[in-house]
Amino acid sequence: MSDHISALVSAFGAFASALLLLGSIAQYRSGASPLWVVAGCAILLVSACVLVRDVRRLRRRAP
Image (cartoon, rainbow, N blue to C red; front, side, top):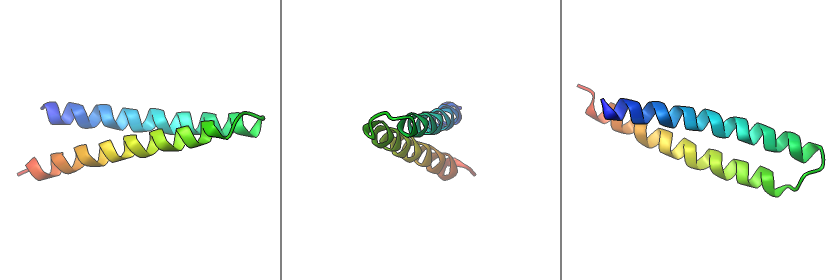
């Protein structure tokens, strides 16, 4: 059961990081530093890797 909760939290984290990336792109278009976009990409990449890891763990334990 804890693996399911971990995967759910990872999915919400990936969703939140995608929203952060979209916000950083909007801020960049309005004149902010391009480092915000780089940070948003890095956060999205890390959260996607964690989500993939959790989903693989769920599939491995499924009967």
